Image 1 (spheres, rainbow, N blue to C red):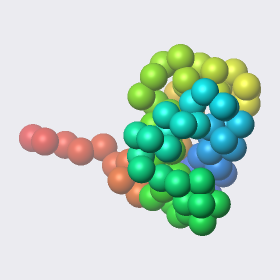
Image 2: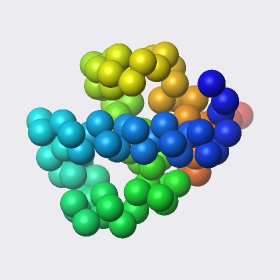
Image 3: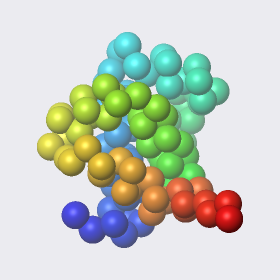
Image 4: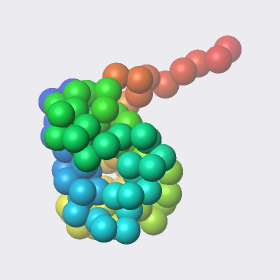
Length: 94
């Protein structure tokens, strides 16, 4: 799959939809990010917000596995998509 910004945004939108449909995980996402349900609608096209969705998803391997299994994606796809969105650049500290 291509790692263009557009494909990364599309993938992150799928992750957001998956979160919204997950009654157990959505409140955790809202609580940990400070986002509101209105933000989910209003910021769904914001690449930085979508990056945050992927950051949240990647906090737990079980979430990555469950999401990727549902959308038939490789387990490294969230990381690759995150790298293509704002703030996802790999930092070199040396």
